[in-house]
Every structure is written in structure tokens, then in C-alpha cells.
Length: 275
Image 1 (cartoon, rainbow, N blue to C red):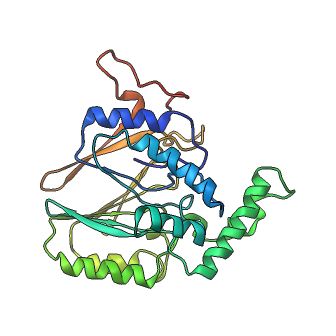
Image 2 (tube, rainbow, N blue to C red):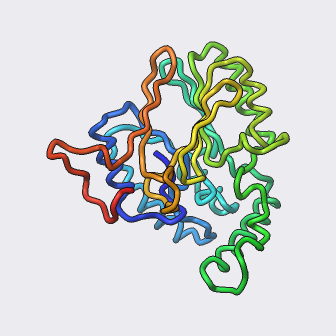
């Protein structure tokens, strides 16, 4: 499942849950932005996460959380995540397929606070609370806004994971922001170097527009949305879920939600039309 927030459209995510239950995958993965977030109010965070969990608990199969910039924008949200879900980055192995669940908001606390405060000011401009032009805000010019960051501890963690599972049949690398578009040691390149010639697929969200490219002779997929905001002028901004079946290599099929119909040929009820 892809981005829910960044301008959630009511009802779409709940409809996707119904559709996933009909498709009956073994488990469901996320690429982040599960709540609106962006607050230091613990009560507000609890309310937003309770709302999300109320929808996701209707899945008939396990759901694996992954944090995005809406979920992990300040130290309070990091602490809340840890208390509720555990580590911000983790891994698991299923039938010799290894999943690396990354945190692309992995900054030192001082930098995280700089980004958080700049983002808050930019949102005030967007919402018309203060005068200004969004494209001229400090936040707009920060590279972390687009591509995120990864710290040395996270890299060390996944290095140990890869050493522990040298013979995994395939590796899926999931993250919210496209770390692979960032240069330097805080981008994905150090982990790509560790992956070397091993078979892997990279999947992320954040852009709210679907794309695919080949990098390092591997598939790098940016998902569209599963209820998040969309640019009406962008033909690749659509609601979908992605079904992955493992054969010798993964077979990835992106299913637009408006094409997943029940026996009556109908969509699940939603608050808004699925584009």
C-alpha cells in the first residue's frame, strides 16, 4: 500500500483494505505516510494513530508498518512510534525472502528539528496563515524534503542483517522517500554497495506519482497513492495497490483500485471517487 496522507481523500484507504482482503495476500507492506502527523501533541498523535489502526485492523492478514515524513517528523513522533510499533527500521525473513524496512527520516536530532521547524513554517505559508511563497521557504530548498536521509547506525544495522542472511533468494528494500536519489553517505549508495550483486528490488512512495526505472540493473519502483493527495494533471497519480508474487524472480503487478471489482462488478464504497 502506498501513501495515505499528504492530503488524505476520505474512504479510499478503507476501500483498499476491503480489496486486499478479496485478493488475500500473505501479508501487506506499507511505504509510509500513514497519518497526517507533524505535531508534538501526544494526544493528537494517539487520535490519528487510533484512526489509522481502526482501518488497518480490518485486514485479514498481518500489516507491516513503515514510517514516512508525516509519521516521523520530530523527536516526539519518534518516541511515540517506538512505544507503539517498536524500531523505526527493521527487517524480517519470509520463505528465504529478506525484507529491509528502512527509515528515510533518519537524521540527527538537531537536523531533524531544523527540518521540522522549517516544514511547520512552510505549511503556514501553504495554508495562508502567513504571507509568503512556498517555493521561497527554507523547507522547499532542503534536499531532505525530497530524498530523505539515512544515518550511520541504520546502515550498520542493515550491514549486519545482510551478513546474517548471505543466501537470501531475494531482497526487498522498502523506504518512504527515494534515498537512492540522494548523493553521498546519507543516501542509499552505501547500502547499494553492500547489496552488491545480490538480487534485490527497491520500492518507495512519497512522490504521489508512479514511476519505474532500472538502476544497478535492478527495479526501482516509486508507488502512486492509496488515498493520498493527487495532482489532477499527472496521469501517473493514481490510487493502487501492488501485488507481488515470488517465483524465481518477483512478479510485481500494480492494480489500480478502480479496476478491482466485487462479484457485482462494483467498487467498495468510498468517500471520494478513486482516480
